Length: 176
Image 1: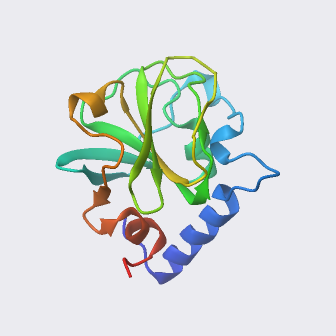
Image 2: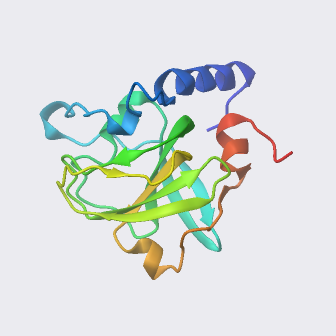
Image 3: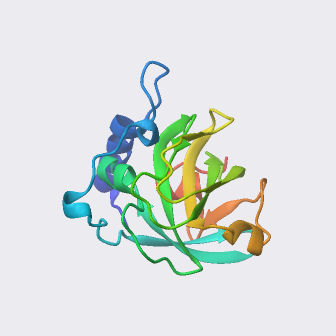
């Protein structure tokens, strides 16, 4: 996804409106999502190539409120090296669950620098929230359950894109 200056500003503004965490309000991921019409999954989202250490994957990008709220609901298949990256405007204490999600998944809570903070297995259709132990989560990556273990990707691993860090890619922030 290539954004011009105006597109980048609009993207940042939409993330600010929908993704900020306020202690008085739950994060987007903690809001009970509406069910997609007729129990259908959302269409495949735009993708981005990610590197988790030396492992390369393709991730769908959930960046709008609707995309984040719907996530992987009602999906019945997922390739081994494909996932979904949830992008939030700022760090917060994420909490994910598996409402209407049929596939067993593992999620990684990732900080604003792109470092994996926590990894959690999630059970299909389990609506028990899995809160992050940190309030520094800005991205969440969902993969097939066990992918992180099978590929020796753990806490402390840096997630990058072909454009650099996650902050450079999504928020226009440089490494400096």
